[in-house]
Image 1 (cartoon, one colour):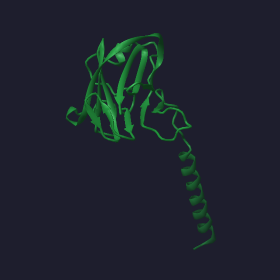
Image 2 (tube, rainbow, N blue to C red; image 1 turned 120 degrees about the vertical axis):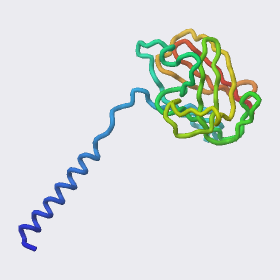
Image 3 (tube, rainbow, N blue to C red; image 1 turned 90 degrees about the horizontal axis):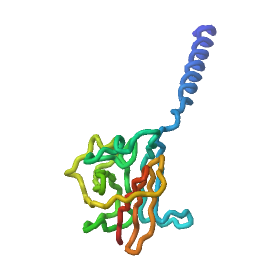
Image 4 (cartoon, helix red, strand yellow; image 1 turned 60 degrees about the vertical axis):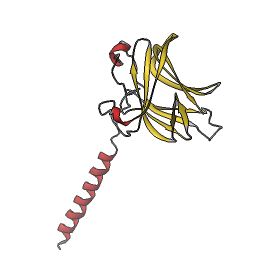
Length: 181
């Protein structure tokens, strides 16, 4: 091989390597509905979690909540991928014992109540692929009204007398989802 051909080949390989490296450094912009996690216990001093929910946090941005969560339609309980809930131990959800594991968490909003759905499908986008035949349990809970509106959809676990409550809030809508041990 001629020296000039060898130099050309090495230069081409070097330039190709640089162009791949430059492309690899393009990062996506921040998500408009960032992902978040709520867990119980929610202090970092206690490593023994009982339950954790992973969800994306849509924001109102001047929109009406009823447009974003239409009554009577299955909602992914957040944005982007369907919300996932992981139980690290068996818990009761209404009359149903939920075995430890990971599930999707859907809701059906209504004016005065939400139907909370635990479903065994995983890694699904939104509620577009929701299959009711894969429901593990459903529970209907009342809607209450908060004093202050929340711009971003939020979830937090709290302790109750009988177990744990997953609190959902967005705008002035508040929903408390009970789990018992």
